[in-house]
Image 1: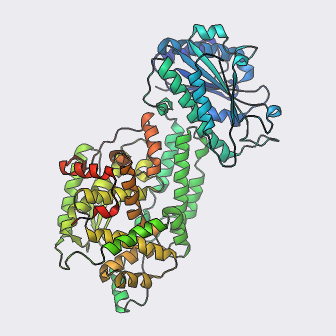
Image 2 (image 1 turned 135 degrees about the vertical axis):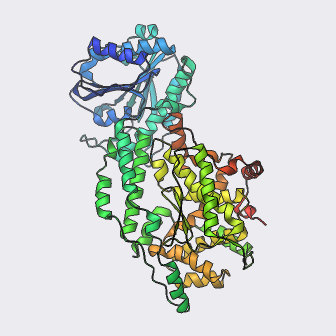
Image 3 (image 1 turned 45 degrees about the vertical axis):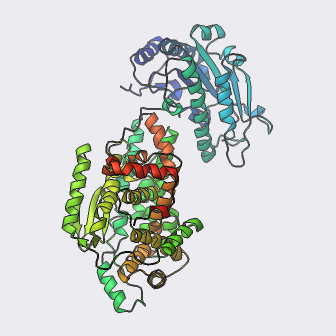
Length: 625
């Protein structure tokens, strides 16, 4: 249960008793203190981080550093007499519960003492007791690396914290309550020396590093000195999420839900365009038509930047939301620039291009498999029959997670297969080889639909909407699932490689007809396949997204070679760089266990393949006979 965020006039005995009573009952406490102060204790924990504004000189920039922690107090130096009693009672109650307690006070070094040779950080602690905790904090701060910012760390005695009118607990009281008192003095490099103006990007970056260092030091203390045994240092982070986070998550999702990007950049006249292109002897690029734009990109951008993400105290969630806002901004720019040269430049920002190494892999595949391996009259599965197989697989997922609300739509305005908003769309004229049906089911349903609803099962909606750059890992997982069920054949790999080559030449200025002819004449693709690959790459004005399939597969194979597991990647639509973020949120119990597993992970025949992948194999080793 969460206490209301109410104003209080004084830190009275009644107020303090109420705080302690809530903590003893295992509740979260979040209460306003006089003059803009705040007490936030996420849950009963054996530590507290404290900041006091200097008398007559509010320092909100430094106060922001403690807001990243699960238990903190922001107050004013003038309130020290009342604050002294509050901290003592919290320390006593938590020491009784856990066996020991730790207080870390954070403050900015006075400007007059911060010369060019002064340390970036100074750790204040007892001269003899608990050297491991102090050393951990010192060493973690030393690891901070910020461009053009040398970091130095000193240690000194904490005696100044225990004496004088501003002390909170003296040495005898610390012993009595089994409490460790540390101080962390920071050189205020995150604000301008001659004013109170803040360097926001530096402050944000530094806050993340300092928060991590504090958690690691606290972790060292609590696992040795207390009965609290967290699984990981990140488990000491905030679990309860303030309502503002859910509002911002919902607002970002609402903007994302107002348009379907892939459908808006996919031609609706593919068949007619192919006939037009063929009649003109492949010498004139076809005219593609697109769905009408359902949104005004400028208005949505205004809403996007009106979302107050800067108010999110949690640095991890703040990063996630800012990252999503940047992605939505670029996506809306792409839609506004559809069918113009600027579309491709926005696509390069969003999806990336083709680097030299990826191009070598793609060209290597096309050299190793120079001709189509399949006979021309390959048996096709009727669209209705394929849709029934997809519905059956969706039912399998639904048996694990009844809230899964998906289905299959057969549509005339779709080319091939597209999953949008958790539903599978199949083109009425889709040509699906029968021997590839199971592989495509696992690609579309066992990966794209599954991760959509695994993300929907999480309290953070960004995990089903898709974090920025999720497409690479998504498509890598989807193609790998084809391999695991035995459906990744040579022709499929040739097409993935052809997409990379076509994207590369697109970004070098190659036109539609030249790209089409290259695929036909140099790489021996049939007319239909060459047109389909070229159309996908040139749609909208130049979409580089199709390079992510092979790139994602290559990166995923490297990830598995390092001994990592596949299943954590299925928690939602994430990218590989987000795995530490997801893991942190799992440790903090902000995210829930994954409810849905794909069928292939339960198949005995797949396990030897997964073990083989962990030994380290290249894309070329995935070729099926």
